[in-house]
Length: 260
Image (cartoon, rainbow, N blue to C red; front, side, top):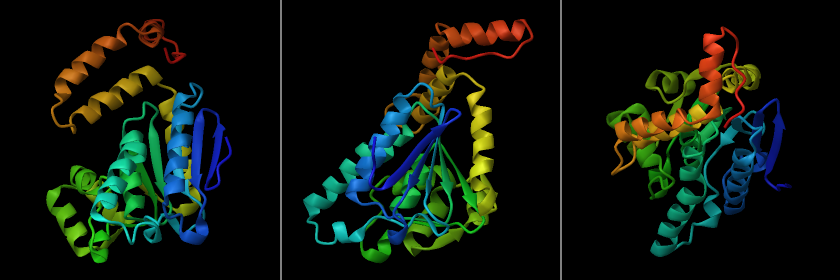
């Protein structure tokens, strides 16, 4: 599939999405959000893709925010629709993918950019990265899940301060807060992330997809995370991956998981 705003490749079980709008600091417009949905959906459907990595083109920005020019004149109804459609099409979609998704924050991740990174299953930042949700400085609030995911990741008080001050934090602060898992030099960001992806690929993709569902369930209204865990734990027993994993353990060999 051809993309206007993305560079998408697959190699050794790793799908890589690069948001390619460097002149706009990779800002998210409507077309890019749609392309991202299509790219994530295609890679998630491909059984040979076991991990998805997403980052921004260049050395300045992961995503510097949303393309403000697109919605500056929206009405109340249009603004609500923008948030609802964006969350469904991309941000909630990414959070609930069955394929593990890693955000590589290689520079500025602001507004919708940080919201996209937070929708991924975890985050790795370069030493020069800066993160924040500055929407209140524009007279609006985060609308792509930022008011929900940021407190889940760093705690209510810190999230309140960061959102209300429209401030930015550096990568080391983000690491201390638990917003990112690792901080590495920018030149090592991709290779470091691929080394983690390779460790993930060694494990059962079926089990990983069910673990994602169980973990996410704890953060969904009306869903009991413990019950979801029990249900998905039981489902694992009916998979070929479970049979292979337990057999390989008993035979003292490495398991070869096929993802079924």
